Image (tube, rainbow, N blue to C red; front, side, top):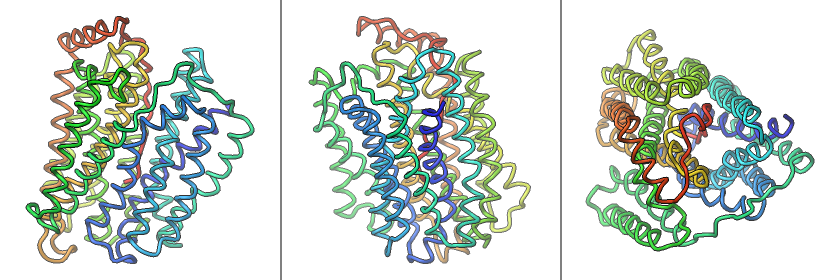
Length: 481
């Protein structure tokens, strides 16, 4: 239980960093004179690095030791937090957020490996993962209020100070109490595949964020889109020839696995857009303080905290289809109600929309990994879970980039006067993400989809994981919007 508590400390600081940074964006914008695209980079720089390095960090931990990797991640995340609090400019803050991202990639996935190797009995492991998931909800619920209070009373730089004492304590406690462990047969490093992933994600998100300012047909933006396409094609060709690839492309022949990837990208793209648009609207358009805006966001966080564990129980009892259907409907309904947003939209209407989004997002997390791992070969279950986690971060990065850029392109005039109207296109995109969750959830949880998963397991010559064998409670691995 002590080891579990130490691992949960890493989740707490990453979860708090999630909503705290989000609430602080307008204050950062004013002090550092950042544009909306600058705010997008504060978000995307962290999630891009995190998404690019998740699988590398997991395989590195298996080779060099999970405790050692976890400590390095804590140290980098703590150092990045300190540097962010001292950042003199927008460019420096974005760079230091990338340092946080490198550290963050070594925290939650590696901590989950430590928990899995510590709690070897199934029932104990399920309880441990349940506690882990509860910490996610606690951190998300505390984030808006804690962040709003800190920003309003001390300033935005104080939001990064919270991570420093917790990170230092976790480093010391890990050294004293967490045993070292390694995989008996770790996967070999794949530097070429890893580099291609980073190039593809980096150039794609850069082109989407910078498109409204530089012009969608400018040489830089068009060149970045081209480089991203070449990197994706190169990754597919290179990985198909490797004996032990970074990602075995045969996994995508499984409809549940492919569907889980699409659902994760869509759901977290919706989350990234929701948090970005809501924060700017509440503080820059409505003129609320950071604390007041944080209190407005609390219903969304509370619903997520309540429904995440309940969704895990539903998945365990009835499978992933029902939670996915309800999640898609709730996300779409929330966003559709916000497509009519105006400067003086009633508080009751906002709260209902935020409650609906929290309901949908809370329901969607448990089915993602369950669907990804259902039918997967037992020896590949960890890789399937890692891909699901990576898809979450990719979705958040791309969502912030696409939705933010669409709103910037639609914005005319001052932010306060025109943002509410310009945000409508963003909310339609969020609603589209909800529809994708609903449709893909329906298609990939039926009997046909299960047969494709069984066929993939057969190609590996191994039995697949049945739905009942997949852990029902799946923790959120929050990035920092």
